[in-house]
Image (cartoon, rainbow, N blue to C red; front, top):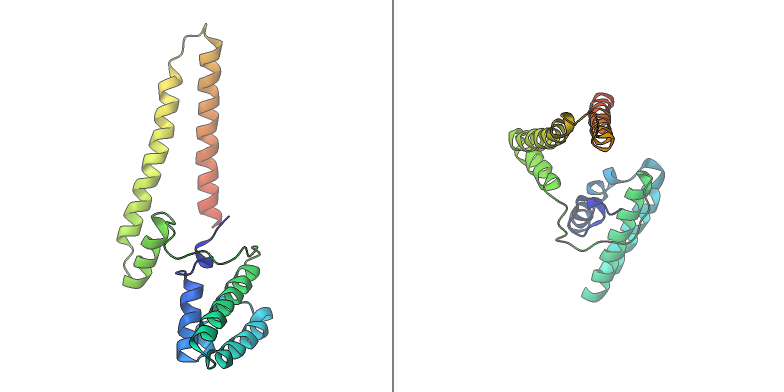
Amino acid sequence: MTYHMESMDGPVVKAAEIALDMENFKYILPYVSVEDERELKDAFERTLSVRELSGEAAELADYWFFETAVRLHLKGDGKLYNGLKPAGIDWGPIIPKVDKAIETEKIDELLNFLINFIKEDIKSRFDDVISKKDYHIQDAEDARDFIYSRLEFISYAQKFYKYVEEG
């Protein structure tokens, strides 16, 4: 699975870019665990010294630092690192809406989107069950189809509720 955090326009690389530009390790520090802080700090310091050699060296060193930061971030989340992903990947509608809500400190657009999405999904599943409800008692296949849809709908609703309730 690919994660937003491992892309060239994701928050880890953005923070790493700022840290290098400002020559301040604190900008990238929150993205790694305490256990990996030393390794990232070493990579940061080595990158800063290599950047002074040439533009080409700086580009290569920066990329290596981005890879190190993303790898250590994913490691802290218990995820495997499979290389940096290019900028511009379509991650779907949620990530941009979450980012915008945080940036603007306004959640209404995100809430409305999620509520409408959930309503449409649940209604579609519900409509599927209802459409199968009035089966003929002699038609075992349709009866099983209804029972299966009903159980799936109940299971979905229960899992959704537990997921939200348990956080």
